[in-house]
Amino acid sequence: MSVIVVDIEADGPIPADFSMVSFGAVIVDEKLDKTFYGELRPINDKWKPEALKVSGFTREQTLGFDEPYLVMQKFTSWIDENSVGRPLFYSDNNGFDWQFINWYCIHFLGKNPFGYTLCSSFFNLNSENTKNHRVSLSLK
Image 1 (cartoon, helix red, strand yellow):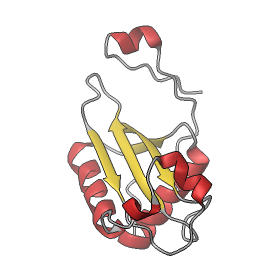
Image 2 (cartoon, rainbow, N blue to C red; image 1 turned 120 degrees about the horizontal axis):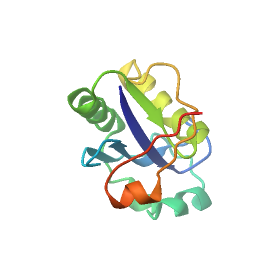
Image 3 (cartoon, helix red, strand yellow; image 1 turned 90 degrees about the vertical axis):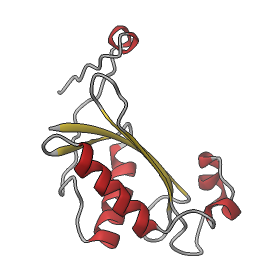
C-alpha cells in the first residue's frame, strides 16, 4: 500500500463545469522524494477569477498548460511506477481534491488508479518525525 497525498488547484468549485489547473502529489515514505506535478489546460471557457487567483496563475497562463489527457496519463504512469501495492488517496481537503482527480481520471482515461473510494482517515505529520524525515500516519 502506498499513501499518496494530493493537492489540486482549480478555477471553480466543481469538475466538468470548471477546470483543475494544477496538482501535485507525493508518496509518503521515509524520503518523501517521489513527487509529481502537473499543470492542465482548461477544459472549457467557464472560470471564476477568485478561484483561479488562489492558484497564483492567470487565465492566460493556464491556456498554455498541457492537455489534461496527457497530464492524467503521466500521473497514472507515475503511480504505476512508484506505488507499492494499492495507492491510497489522501488530501487535506478530500472532498474537493478527490472530486477533481476522480472526474479527470474517469473522463480522460476511463479509470481511476485509486479506485472508487478515498481514504477519509485523519492524516497527521508529526513535527518531530518530520524533522527526521519520518512520517507518522494516524489512522482513525
